[in-house]
Structures are given as structure tokens and as C-alpha cells.
Image (cartoon, rainbow, N blue to C red; front, side, top):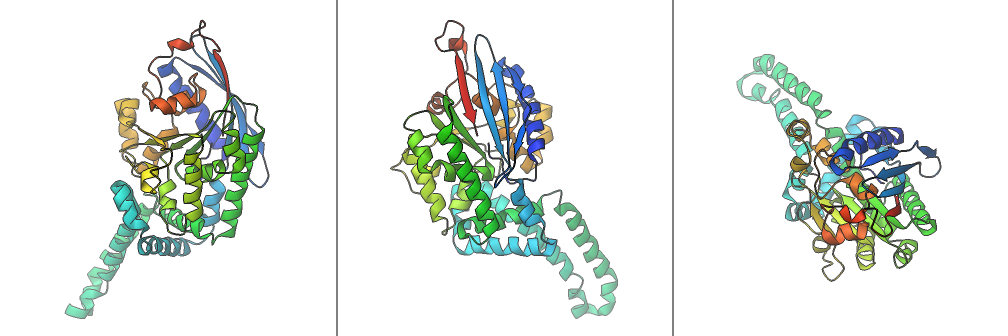
Length: 387
């Protein structure tokens, strides 16, 4: 499993996984057993543990591997705040000048607004700062007595709001979005290459009956880069191999003209037998809702990913939904969180349930009835690996 661009440790991911699996279990009549994690150090840190699931007459065992992508955040956060803001602004201009911004607008207007949001806040801050100077040019310097405190108070209020509204995080994300295709951050490139190589190596040597690579948000990018490796496409001819792209950030990177390798990797995965499920939600601004990656990247002749629309409101109790609705980053993470009502999409039911992933993709979501996996059904046990 490849998480999104957020500063969450492997230990915290495991705690979250256990908590949200337990939250999902009642809706699907499942008992989940989450094992203790084994942390592996190296070029890329991983956390491995076992997920045992048991339902009415069926059981599965899945080997879960989490990749530590939080170090990406650290590579940007260690810079001073002015540097982070300037790099984010510079990356945004790069994306606009090279046409990526217009492609965002074409394929996802909500994502485009998300893209503009931090810069609108910065413009407001600069406008308030201008109030400290402009009155002096027209009505005398004495106006500074009221304009300076007003401007400083407004700027301070916006600065206090910046962190809770994730502005620094978004600025780092834009910088990463440009650094990946341009390969101008060697440390980022080496880390992502190590992750992709490790995924391909594990897939090539696994004994699992099927393998599902889960890429949430930015995590979908290294997931696709890994699956494009010949070791993976070859295995896909021999055993079921799938990609669950949840709230995918693929187009955020692939729409940059310099992202030729990312687009090439996406094309290779589409041409392969790999089953690709692309989960999208209209509530989440950090994905490209109702946009098939094949259409957006001009690959209509390839095998198209199966797009499944997720309605978070239908998965959660009203109070739970109200609590996440106002935080777009928390809403974005709902793709990999637990649910309180049964529906056609739930991460833990997909990776731990009895349905083969290829069937879920073909149907466009989970089956409403798992009765066919009763004790009388043939081959009721399943062993899977989720990366």
C-alpha cells in the first residue's frame, strides 16, 4: 500500500489500518485480525503485517506491505517556510505556463480550484499588506496609523489559518508535482525508484494467489511506475495482478509536459492484463472525478481502467460525514478509511474480502451478496498480497 503525500509514520499507518478495519467489519459481517507490524529498513522503509478476515463460511489471509512515503514530506519540510512558499509558487507558475493548469481545468474543475486555493490566500495576504502603504500616497502618512495595524492584523490572521488550511503542505505538493517529471530533486527520484524496484521484486517472487497494489492519492504514481516494470507485466500473464488507484493523483503529475515516463508507464499498465480500478469521488477535490485516465492521457485504444464513483455520504452515518465534510484533506483520506454502511466500495472489504479483485473491477465495485462464498462454495479460502 502506497499512501498519499502526508507526514504519517509507518507505525501510525498501522494503527489507523487496525482502527479502520474494525470500523468496517460490522457492515460486511467480517471479523478482521490485524497482525503486528515488522518494520524493514533500507533504501525504502516498509511495514509488513498479516490481515486475517473471516465471514460466513469463508476466510482469507492477506500479507499487507505499507511503504513509507512520509520521508518525501520531510525532504520539503526541512526547508524554511519562505523557501517552501517560493518553491510552491514557482512550481505553480511552471504548471500553468506549461499548460498543466488548463488540463486540470479540463479534466477536473474541483481539482483546479484546489490547485488555485493556496495562491488565492497569498494574494489576499499581499493585498492586505498593500493597505499599509497605499493610503500614505493619497492622504498623507498619518493614515499609516490605522492602515498598518489593520494590514498586520489581517496578514497575521491569514498566517495563523495557513497551517490548519494546509497551505504549506499544498505548496510542497506543487513542488513535488514538478520535481517528479523534471527529476530535479535527486533525493526524491532515488527514493521513488527504490520503492518501485522493491514493489516489482516482491511481486516477482510472491507465492500469493493474487496481488493488489493500492495507491492512494500521490501513491498512485509510484504504484503505476512499479507495475510498468517488466517483472510485473510478465507476472500479470500468469497470476491475477491488480491496481487500486484511490483518489488518484496520477493526472496531477502526468499532465506536466515533462512527465513522459509517467505517461508511458500508465500506457504500459493499461496495455497489460493488470486489472485497474480507479476510485473517484465528487466530494473530494483532490481527484479527477468522472475522468478516465485513458481519455485524459489520450490512450483510448488501450484497455481502459474501470472507474468507480464513491459517495462518502452513503458510506457514513450523518454525524461522521459532517465531521469530515469541512476538511478536504480528511475527506480525501476517506478512500482508505473505514466505512459504517455497506456499499460497492470499501478498501478493507476489497483487500480482505472473498471476492477476487478481477471480479470487483469487472463489476465496477463490490458485490452486494457474498452468499456464493458459503461453505458449499468451491475454493472458499483465498490468499492474497496487498502492497
